[in-house]
Amino acid sequence: MLFDARRLRPIVACMGMLCCLLAMGQGPRLGTMGKRFWVGYNRVTGGGIPATLNINGQPGTTGTVSIPRAGWSTNFTLPATGITGVALPTSVENTVSEVPADKGILVEAAADVSVVAVIGVHYSSEATAVWPEEALGTHYRTVSYKGVQWSDLFRSNLLVVATQDGTVVRITPSVTTANGQPAGVPFTVQLSAGQT
Image 1 (cartoon, rainbow, N blue to C red):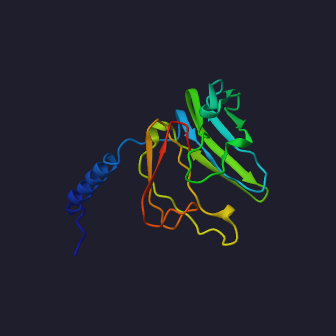
Image 2: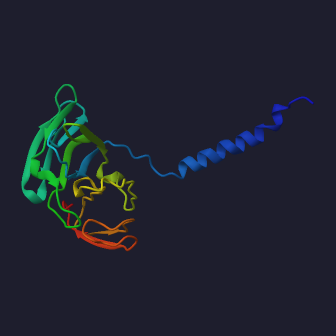
Image 3: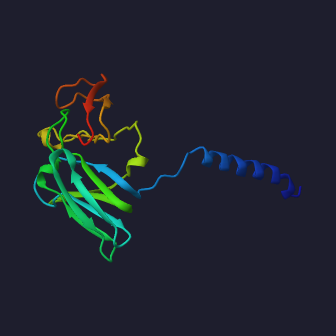
């Protein structure tokens, strides 16, 4: 029996159309470039690399990094390399759990930039791409690890930064939280813009 490629054409065409429809159903593609970003830092123990924001974009782009609720701000201009680091005050680290703090960091730029949050200790460092405000959603799930039994300093955690007043965060923990919220029972935290 000979293979007849003409019989596959309708199937291939239907599969191609299906793939196009599925891709279109994913919504707009949102990247890491933007003009307005919110970010925060969890507690890091052991000293080391200070909290820094690496800002990338077109040379000459200007902007401001601020902690609005704490009254701190600094301006930046991207140099010829298109990247600059903005060191943040040590007080930016969140050291409390399940209690609002005024430590949200706002990056505003005159043109599209990308932002990477960096922090570390002598034996490890962490970095994450920060999503611009228009790319943020309202439903998240975190991936965590158990931590170590002998110290509360190394428990898994998450940090939420409110981008607007009246933000209500509903959390359903899978284990009892550091402040005693029971596993599987939802609780809420109310935040104003710039609170973590």
